Image 1: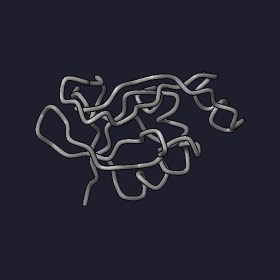
Image 2: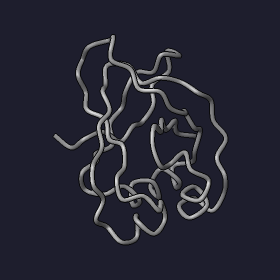
Image 3: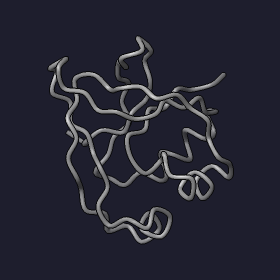
Length: 112
């Protein structure tokens, strides 16, 4: 069974996908509803090495349907979702969210 994962940040980068999943993902553009985006500083050396970026985007749930974040919805395996969990640092938590397409997907949002 496949999982839906919405990415608005570094998991869209080919180098991060290859390092995290061992393959390039295919996906469809979509929007996350009721979230706003900001930046978080990354200190984890493994994540820094994979992404090449010191600051990563992070989203916070606002509950306001007018707040939207653009990104990509990927279909991945349960094992790949576990790999994504290992990639994300402690600032993020995985949660289910509604997308503009009407689909529900996992998304990594700011830990409450």
